[in-house]
Amino acid sequence: MKNYPSWRSLGAWSAAVLLFVGLSAPAAWSAPYAYVANYSSGTVSVIDTATDLVALTMNLGTHPYGDAVSPDGSRVYVSNLNSDTISVIDTANDQVVATVNVGVGPDGVAVSPDGSRVYVTNSGSNTVSVIDTANDQVVATVNVGSGPHGVAVSPDGSRVYVVNYNSDTVSVINTENDQVVATVNVGYLPQGVAVSPDGSRVYVTNACASSTSCSGNGTVSVIDTANDQVVATVDAGFDADDAVVSPDGSQVYVTNDCGSSSSCSGNGTVSVIDTANDLVMATVNVGSGPQGVAVSPDGSRVYVTNSGSNAVSVIDTANDLVANTILVGTDPISLGDFVGPGALIASNSSASGGAGTQISGTVPTLVNGTSCATTDEVVQQPAHGSVVFLSSTGAFTYTPSLPTYSGTDAFTWQGGATGSCPSADAPTDPVSNTATVTLTIDPQILGLANLALGENDVTYETFSFTGSTPFTYTLASSNGAVLPLKDLMVNPAACGAMENLDCSLTISSSSVTGTSEVTVSATDAHGDTVQKTIAVTVVPPSAPGSSSGGGSGGMSPLGLLMLGVLVLFGRWGQRRSHSHG
Image 1: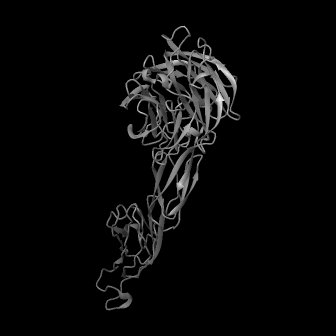
Image 2: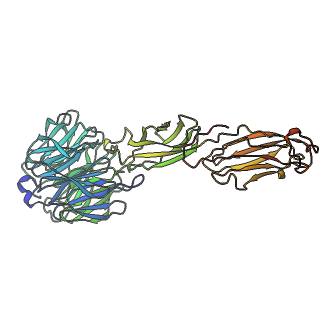
Image 3: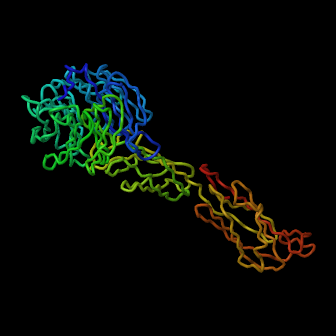
């Protein structure tokens, strides 16, 4: 078997870690990326799991070892074994944005489900450093057993489980006060640790079956978290190293460093344990020296780092066969299940409607890359109205506070995971999983007012339309014999087709006298329509020398009847207030 990298042998050890995180994207969610820390080459290989290709290789520092991704996928925390630091990577641009000093020989890293804390095992000082992610500062140091290595956090964030390689124990830390509340005896030389999605079981890999002999297979200790007692021991492959639990909790995948007790020169294996009966249901041959193991957010793939072949094996969980092999840097190894769901990226969107009316719409679907459904909620109501939000579908209805308000308004919404999902799938970062819905409220068509016609007179009584988009005119005459449609003219001809035009409606009466009604209508782009009906009486012209009716004397026999019409348009998104004249 291999000489496991306790602090007493760190100088000759090579290591790296695998984890998954979704790179920030403009909308929704993209396939998760795997960050593999390569100990000997001092790099991090970034794998696009959609293509199983290395998309980027980052130069990190001295001997990157353990790492973990934040639950929202925005940060990666990498331990640097020989420099006693943690590198903080921003996944939006794959840049190191902070370096945190921790204890001696940091290796294992885990992040709390809410993303507020990072727990780092320091194998050289027998401590756990607790980092506050808000300011990337160590806020507590917890003494644990000898040679702390693997570390995992319960789904509810209340407990941290630390594997102590040299003392064959697991320290249980209460996160409320950062105190060890229990110590559990497990197998010989425990290395990796994983917690079930429901938090009821902890799985600890033990390199050897007993303290007297390492000639046989390793084991997995199953801890009941209700009483912190080992309730089962499962035989695994030779030199069991790390473990991860499938998203549905039905399988545990255990890396076995060597294929057999007689030789570690060949390929290793992965044991697949059925959690219903704590028995190995399959064994998968992978690369040389398998160490780290992680599962994709949807549970369809298991990724294994092979330190001896500088590669990552991709296992298809549908048939437990290796579907792909990805070459990475030198000495890729991992500690436990460091998996992120991929960043939840909400998309900004917009909707529009007329003033005084409700606006309905649906926010873009928010996908978190797992089988878990997402919930949505409004986190900031609009300033000029209110929103009713249906979280199951993302449908919303906006109701304006004032029927006359026009312009823009906005509200923000946030996505989250349902209660049935593992808490690690729930996003918390306010940047990556919130979005703004911009609402454009078009000004109202206020209607027609104070419109009048005098017989044989020219009047300048006005009416107004208001709309954010051009509207169409409709003119009608109730008595075509007196006022045929051909005698209803709009000047200019483009009135209603463009914004901010003054339009005149000219009615030239025919030779027939009598009464007719002129109906003026306007319909805007939203289908809102207003109209006004005007009674028009056509009379013969006054007799020569007569002064009745304010007539025009020398005008044509039938005279000319003019109606001045002022048509006002509101520009798109501009706030206006209109009153009837």
